[in-house]
Image (cartoon, rainbow, N blue to C red):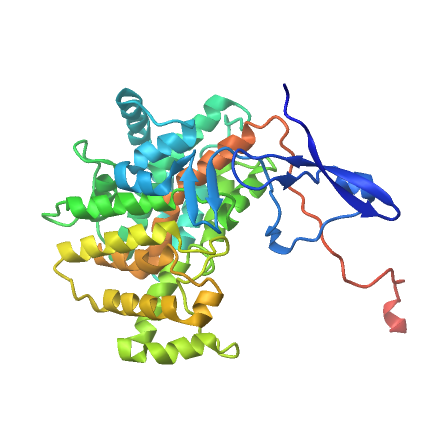
Length: 430
């Protein structure tokens, strides 16, 4: 017996409009508005799309009220504990966990794309010394569209897959090149004996004499990459989808996502958190900054707390906090001043009614910057690391969107509040 169609009725202008309800695999029903304007002549008003499902997707589910995040149905807690970033990448792209042989083939395809064309390498010579790493990442990813454009057909599965592996292979090399451009060092090399995360560290620091990858650090990086791999229709993913919906070159769409991620209200928050710690300086100054954060007339903001979706503790934050302790313990920095400051700040905020009432719990950005700093990365690289993790989510969403035969270019409407019709006045009569 088929599933009964569900509708919701809307009374308007003396009549009734019935709107279909779409039933997701998990979560609340969704009102189908695609024909709403044609039926009523009206538009809906939803600033920043907080109540709008912009697409159908099978990839990631977030329940902000319950604090749930899952990739293809697998809870993030299980994946962070048991899996690896490449295995999670396979899961996101293919929809199922791989066998060992499938993962080996997947890893080989990524490895084959871990190289840069000479023209991209030369691009870094043109950047000024004080260029922000994210500006270099946006530019270098966009530059790939100048190389991969002649034969790419976004509607062909083979071309989409080639793009997916190109992105997964090249972005770590780009990130390593950016870091070593800043440090004036040599990019390390790929080591067949190392896993994906360990190889990233080797690319970053392998040009330093006698460098060896610490397994605690590579495991910490793997956890961070997994936790940041995807997060449903956030600002940057939506940017990739919106840009990609025009049929633009996929590397241009990826550059749009990176640009969106750079903002301090999105991926740039991890860098902003460390800047905030440096501004607070010590635990005895926390209460002063707590009061500043509560003052609506004060420009100071408490970074790393609260989330647009989560109204509970961010499920990723607890894992990153535990990973932070492991990294600092390995370094012999049990009493790391920044970690002590973070823990004290979190403890106060979690028990302060002001923050409780506003659901301002620690989010994924609160501890990640401390880990990246402990690994030897300058704070300007933190958002690059976020992008490095998120490219697999962006690429998977782009591939899913381009495989949809019903794809149409994204075109939001607006609530126009400007002047009504006015007649032009000649210049000499004004």
